[in-house]
Image 1 (spheres, helix red, strand yellow):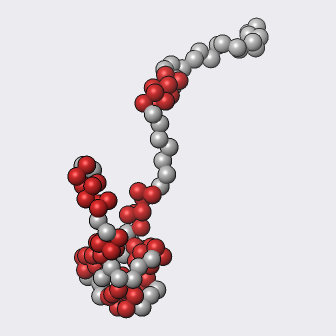
Image 2 (cartoon, rainbow, N blue to C red):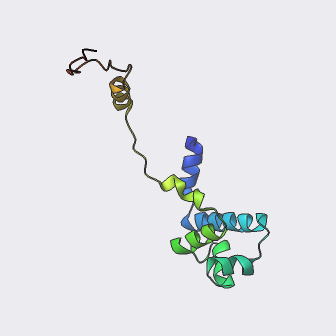
Image 3 (cartoon, rainbow, N blue to C red):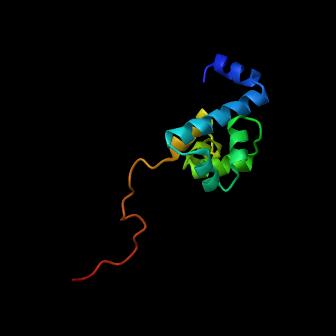
Length: 116
């Protein structure tokens, strides 16, 4: 993301963001050729709730998740999965600790050899 894009997003009002999310849902609904009635039914909500959500007027996180699930778009939420992040120094140390070779199996092998 460029600095300009980030500045634009932070300057955007909450209402504008909700409207953009509603437009996202509407575009995906239309791309899947679903009516508002059909999607609302699949998401377990009324058509008026969906209409208001698509217009950026009535929204909450549960409604958003229900719509993503009904549209089979839950992967959109992958960005919220926490990932371990390492500094470049930590990564270098981890790389140094990785095995470079397999050790010989004869080390520490104190079993007597057979007389055969």
